[in-house]
Image (cartoon, rainbow, N blue to C red; front, side):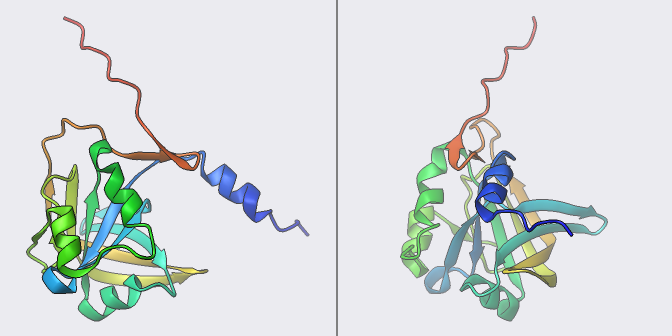
Length: 171
């Protein structure tokens, strides 16, 4: 029988996989909740499905299940401070979060950030327990891409980093 892998080693090894950084939002105006996530995966093109992973015992999962919808905002490097702020337990909520994000209410009733690299508005399609997390599968009902000029916010080896500068196209 194989030995159980060490948790610290597992975290270190998983940290070698660079990820984008997002803000998951549920609700808007006085009912806005926001958390920082780096677990966004495209699942299907037909229908359009994405997957996010949230703590099973966290505050966000029951909100998403109760409302049946959520939004995922893909952050730019310039929005690093938002990623850091909304991963804290004492993060802003309600109207204060809407103002901090410069968010607007999307078609699903969830906060979206027009200045984000992109955002996806979803209705909850399915949820699956996976250890101490819940996998939320969202059916994308609306999406938008930003100007595409800023660099995406990237998390790698336990810290924020940047992609190498793009090479100038050959003339």
